Image (cartoon, rainbow, N blue to C red; front, side, top):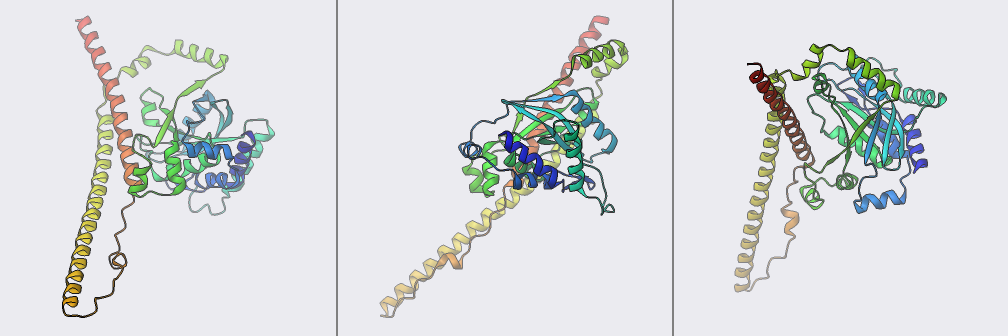
Length: 373
């Protein structure tokens, strides 16, 4: 397994990051594809995926330095709803994934035609290896805008990573929620069922129904723990002691209307998309039903005509393949609808967490007001 992770990291270093996100960030798509192409998948890993066994990663341990690098990356290059992405480096110990380092995908525009993403990653990996820093690929990270991260691009990239390096994860960092005083950093993996469907590329309604894929079991969240050295913990304690009371009270801010309104607006947009997909599917079902009626009418007329020909002593008409005459319409792909449903589920969970915190603050404020009066 260690040899396979070595091969995957070397492939990522030579493959480079290719896709773009937000118009200017080198995404993990081509890097993940290079990992998938070069890293050999063991027979045990293939058998485990086919059998739908549990995830090999039960916990993700992140160094505090990695968290600071991700936050700093967004603060320097992220603007508005623009997404920033980068590579996660580390190692696997038993069923725990330890993320010890990371580096960002650089921002560039279409004018930077001479920018070589492959060379960039090769230099980064070589430099880390020379200073004896963990340089094994263990996944990638991405920022999100109000929790909007469930997309086809993320699904394809994570499938490529996870197919090549079984323990890979994607870290989703929400800067807006973090700015309100609560660090929002979550680790996700594709479930074994969704991995199998992506491998077969069978996104038809029948294929998704057969695999029992729903919007709630596409991704699995892995618990995260942040590890700091003892010196860092002492520094944080001293900063906590020196912080003013006014800064601590910002966590009790009751002004939550704008954040909740934006989440509800995004939720309504996704519900509208789901409604359009439902209309498309209903149209497909009506076309299938209409075609079946036409097929039955055609067969009935042909049967009556053959009966009349037999009574007149004439030769019956030759049998024809009705399936060639009435080709069934192509069903609409269900993957996009499934992703929209998954994003709706993520929005609902986010609104639930936010409102529960707001309700707690309101009850606390009511108790304090009653005590003061």
